[in-house]
Length: 498
Image 1 (cartoon, rainbow, N blue to C red):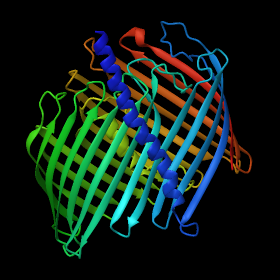
Image 2 (tube, rainbow, N blue to C red; image 1 turned 180 degrees about the vertical axis):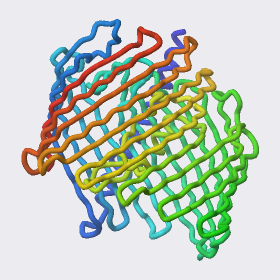
Image 3 (cartoon, rainbow, N blue to C red; image 1 turned 30 degrees about the vertical axis):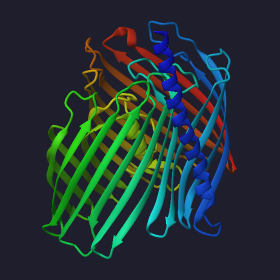
């Protein structure tokens, strides 16, 4: 047993080192890409900031209602920097902050956390060779079935730090107006400070081809993708290969027929039934008016019938509603790397998710961060509107996740509302609430209802200096009474931007 334990530790050490080096490299590479931009080209901004926060929590140790709750007061110092812009042959969107916690009751004395979300691209050879780098440092909930405080206080109680980096060199090939092709290689790394989340490394190779602008009524494309993921600590590796071709025929100005056919194999011992065979899809894409669009598909993939939906309707110049549905076999690491490719900025320079136009959030789904492959179905509907002094949003989401290795089927149904409004030239406010119905899929048929409420007031003391008062409440009601949980948090924050 002793020899096995040493071998296990050696594997874990090697895996951690293999991930840590690329993470540090990627983080250091992003500023290098930025520095390569000509000083006179493009539009660039560097915004350092320093923040101090006082926090009061009535459940700092994340205790359930049947356990002793410990209140605490914390003081946090948070230097931060934002870099964004594009010019010359590079673009970069980076937000980083470091949080140092000081606790009165020692629940998080001297602990610290880092947060990073970054996406940068450099054009190495004009219109031909590029490199894209994305990286993140996030705090993830280890086990969503266990209690976790609303506010991250730096404690490792059911939270951990996850670092990811993706380096993707790619080459574009132009064959006049006949064909456009892309060759891409991706190196992805994920490292966690928790033993519950496995470190992973993956290598992907993708070649895609699409018809050029010479084709109008009938267009076509194809792709060959091969991904290999290696997991540390003796977890099974995963290899997938997908060859797919797609076709589109424009029936009229407002309607197109779409289809695809190909072949796919996924070799992963964690799956009870490994997909291996022909895949296909048929559907249509419509644009009934200048305000609306709809795309629907049905097909056969992952050894089952699959559906896809993407729809949007612009109610007015400032209001929009959208809906989407998709099915996949994936991991939390893959989802996190994909999310980073959709980082954008709003009119105020804040990072947003370009798919939802909401503030960017790199946290995992409501069902938690998971290493093993899982079969996922996700439906979401979002509404966004802005007015002269305010912005408002509402959302509905449904998610179903099946993990073959454990046989667990989890489901979550959620709704959320949020609003922000400028009350005066110095004062603004925001409020949001979310309700979740979660089926944990456990043998005891546990079901949870969670509710969260947050509100804040922000006051501009002087140019580039803001003070904020916030309140957050979280509550969980479970069919298993031992998992009932609630906490309240009040924070006072002072931030100076330079």
